[in-house]
Length: 156
Image: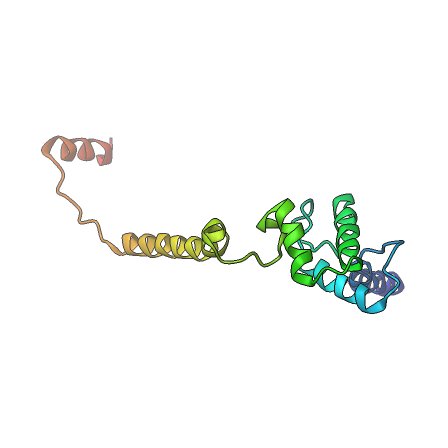
């Protein structure tokens, strides 16, 4: 019994620590120049996978992310600067493709939405607490209601 428990615990630990090893997508083609490959990986880390949405294209195994990695590597190999590569991808996919979109009118909801939701939730909690504190004063029963109570509580 104890052996099964230890074995189960060991397997859980192995599973828990194996996740980061699978976090980077492996491409069959990389740039021959290590400096260019490093630049491309930095750029890829800042671009969002449009399929996964919470992963960079460097981490994703989605086919679109593979295609975007090829585009980034191609632009870096062609001699584009980091900003030119990002601008090229943003031109085709919009600001949403950036892991940190710029602060402008079109992305205002992305930047201020979480704070607005937090304020809205805090206001709702405050209103609920305030309403709960209000004591409702009992009103006197009418003559008809008093008669009905007496009929219901009178032993027969």
